[in-house]
Image 1 (cartoon, rainbow, N blue to C red):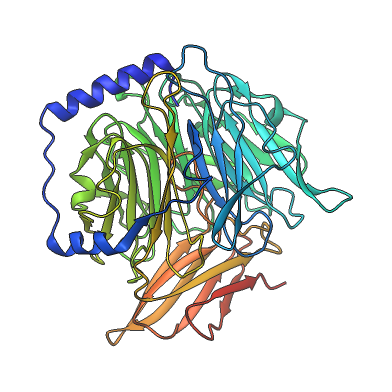
Image 2 (image 1 turned 90 degrees about the vertical axis):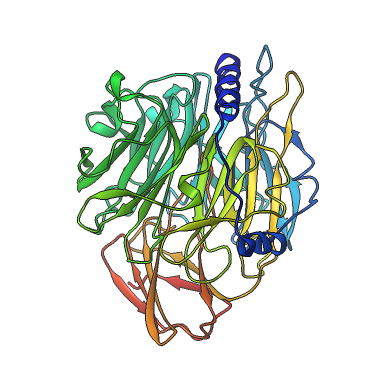
Length: 518
């Protein structure tokens, strides 16, 4: 979230871009028809009636009952003259209905909270969280525990730099950067209104975190919005891309790609590896949009400028490519994330825009995206700044949650938008992983799924990630759309520990739980 000055500036720039004549082409008839039947905006109080200035939204199964619960981090009303912190809100999933729940050490914190990342940081079997706070406030590392009475609660980790560092922290992304079995943390600082270095914390043993201070991802002084981890070069460790507001003339990289060289050492890749032509990227999303086995990159930009799609060429470099409507539509895009929304076997795209309609783009199978032209999305003006996907009703397709932040002065707070996926065509498989030698949440694990369609064996790849959209997180369980395939030829898990595990899939349309072999 920006402060009041940058909030007004963004509004002026965005309106100017719209009236400058940004053209929006008409969607195809097929995509319009798909839009009408795909998503329905759900009236689901209190989630969709609570009014606050939402920072981030995270779908997580915190109580390990198999369905997606939800944390909404509520920062502050950015249009207010005297911003005050708001309490975060936790919604427990009760059979597809979200109910507000007070959780000690989580919902009773006063903070200017922006985004959260969830993983089992101490490998004790339950999910913990790190919450990034703005306005020069200390961030929160919260470890989940159970009271003597059996109630779940969170304990704030109070030692070391991970508890004492503070800044204008907008988002956090977690990964086991050194493959030692513990999930590390990367915090993005600056965002819309400030600049500064980011924070990288090495998780030593689940209870101690060391600040890493002498490498590129934390020595480059830039205004960072979001960051995301993925193994872009296929060497078995997690690489990092950071979206920065900095312009090249200020010495910053708007898209900074860092190759992980092992041992917490990173090399910043130059424009020959990743073209330096993104507009004003606020967030990034990884996804294998062409099903060739490696993660491609999408950058969502502000101020009415086009978003960009970068194809991973498989040799350590990327090229900017035409992604159809996903790279020609203009908006002020804060968040984007990939998921197979129509269960046809390729990754589709959702983009949350501020001051306009948010968008769904369906993939034609080759990484070319057409806009879903109508339905719940296109009839609504959103002030979206966060976004997450999850199958909250466990019906086999991905639903959408958009977090909105204020547009109107004073008490002008926005409702969040929950869109239920009613498409339900095509088979599916949901895969939930548990690490043993790897980190318990299996963050960074790569899942390869092979299936037979149209007489050919086709492959899909997913990586377990703590980042989706801006300041948000989707489910750790991975969703695969299978189309009309009634079986899976093979499923292989590449664990962060380096182990490879082939798993037999008995049937489709189920959640498959896999534990790493000893």
